[in-house]
Length: 174
Image 1 (cartoon, rainbow, N blue to C red):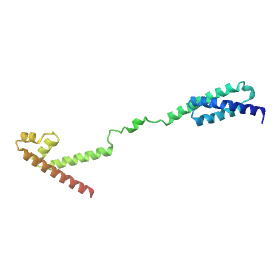
Image 2 (cartoon, rainbow, N blue to C red):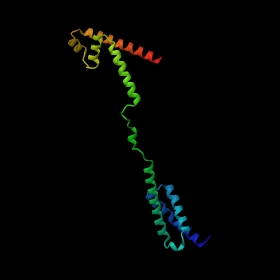
Image 3 (tube, rainbow, N blue to C red):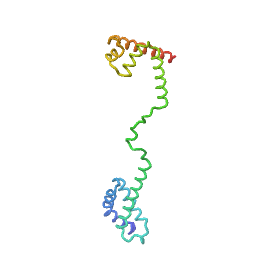
Image 4 (cartoon, rainbow, N blue to C red):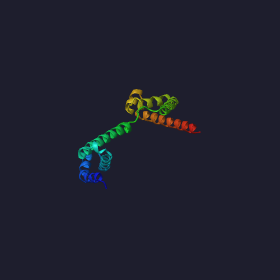
């Protein structure tokens, strides 16, 4: 082994722990720091002797340079692969899809058609109850009929609507 290799081996024995701790303190993981220390000593062995006056200072400067390079690489990686904040991925688009709008329009048309087939008094009671949200007593008072008659008209309207929609679905399935 040459004198130069022996001096680098001795320097490695004394400096490796200090350099590893320095790199960990600058954000590298323990494994990354250990790999970087190996790279630092390879750089020292490859550097021309005339360029390295103080090997310990050279290693410290090179360690700082590796830590900065590591930090820059991390920043670039984060910018490249960070697309959306995690919360943004959880927010659904409130706008219904085209298909959903078509289905909704068809359902509304079916319901309007079904409502048009109801007897006038049943339709009136149903609309007052479901759309104007009037109670049975309020509907009875407004139409001048008994509360029980309101309930009968509402039950008839609901049964007729169910029957109409069932028939529509049965015909649509064929």
